[in-house]
Length: 259
Image (tube, rainbow, N blue to C red; front, side):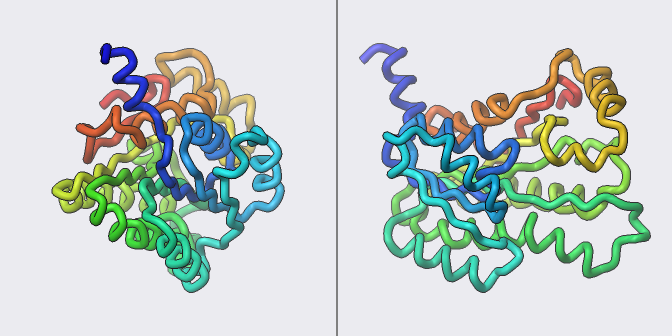
């Protein structure tokens, strides 16, 4: 077998069962479509009905039988755990992508403790539950991939996002902890840290044109990121091509932050 065909096989996701939160959102939709195109079976969790419909409509008919859409509020941990148990009971979950997040914006002193907990419940605790549900199956088969979607905001430079940044820091810590703890079972865990992408998240900025220029001024690459830029990195990390990569945080930010 030549090296080209060998590498192509390592990128294939045929037969892999992927649990993906926030799978129909601005960055999620493109990644879901790419994972399906690579042969994966995607269990897509999202609670935005309009975006779920958009995702469903975008999936080619020949791939539709490999997509399961679940509208779940990730803050409802009781329902989430019940659904996850049902999913894991039928067959092992090979890949978990913890992507869903909420991002309220206001000065730190205006956040109540309940506000902070609400962000943590979705951005972090849902990721804990998804990973915990998948872990036994991954461990039993000696193979697994966990990908936590972090954020460029951890590098500083963004005000009024304290609970969001805090939650993304928690995901980075979990990435490193899980990589170390789960590695002996052939399970990798990595983080992807998107830069500033033109998604719904940018609607919190009062002057879109000014913000767009702000982003371009800071990036080494003078174009805005596209969802496919994130999809490519996530697809790589889910595959056997990334089997020796774990405990890492990969920035996808056009050279804004260079680690």
